[in-house]
Length: 152
Image (tube, rainbow, N blue to C red; front, side, top):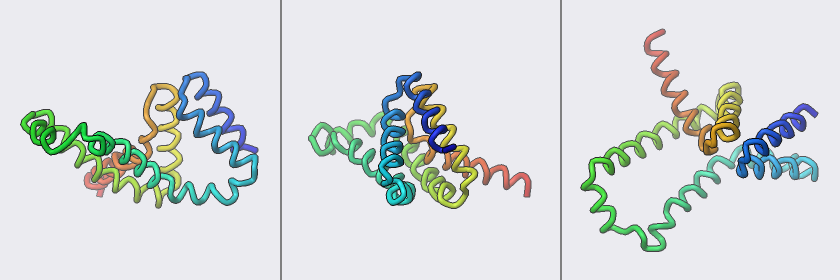
């Protein structure tokens, strides 16, 4: 019953914030819960969902390459820009940090709860995008390692 109330509360926040992604996600979970399919699918989605989501995001990012809007010529031209190099290095940094965050999410449930709640708040209240748990976990991992270096 607590999970149902929590989801409904989050749905109300999603509606108030007019956040379609949050509303769809919660509606999907409520449908699974009410149809009894949640017993089977919740664990599968929890285990594989982040990878599925990353795959879908990767497909979306690669569409301009598939359509021919971006090719080797555009890549070569962009790398002449200082900002493109910043973007390239940022992409590398975020991907490496997120990989560490994935391990943290899988192994530390209380951190996962805080990160997920932070992401929900950001999506609902600040028009954030729900990639937050993975990136947030990576940043949390990095921060924990830095704190560990100074407290050890």
